[in-house]
Image 1 (cartoon, rainbow, N blue to C red):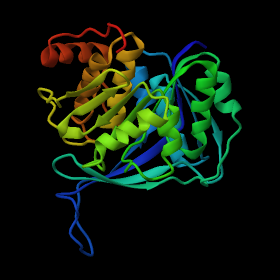
Image 2: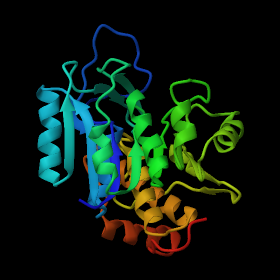
Image 3: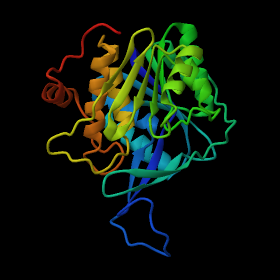
Length: 310
């Protein structure tokens, strides 16, 4: 099966609790709106987002033989997403996410699996033989997929999420991927140094700092830096930021893999991230190619994916 994007790791289930504000005041109890449970987590978001945009996508991971694992299997089957997995007795990853009235979130993440979990590399090596690009979530074992992609001459990406530039868990991913995405939430005052370190010590062609309402900033190896402002989608006010970064990544890859330059790809990511914030719940409304082209035209004066990589 020829594959545009192979996503490795990062499937899980989110329980969303809506609250008035963050942090939540200490109290014995709070009455909240109906609590929802959704197929979530970063790998699911990137895989579903790429698939929705028309990229041929395969997703591989380790899940549990449990209710949450069956939720994943049902959702991916309903979407027509090709998902291959192995089962581990520790179960399926999950998180409880608090979301305030402005759509901001605080996530309580349960990785579930042992840190030293090491599935058979055949899980990704077979699909890698047919892949044009590999995106690895930051489970400890998935760095092997980035190393194998580099050895095979296949481009790769990863999302470091809220890395602070110091946590050693993230470093192998930061230095092993061609495209590195990271949240700006913990980089105030150190962003320039962290980006420079990734470019100096790793193989990255570019680093993208995704920063919510402050937009995103892209630094291209030997190509300078630029910023793309955040956008508001008419009729879709931001109510839930869960999955926005994953939507950004998927639309960035959609443009970049089609030959779009870094600026065009970042604009696509910006629109997709804003779109994802317009509905409650994780990965509950994924942007398609037609909507992306329309919103790119509305906000940036064009919907083209094409161009040269820069």
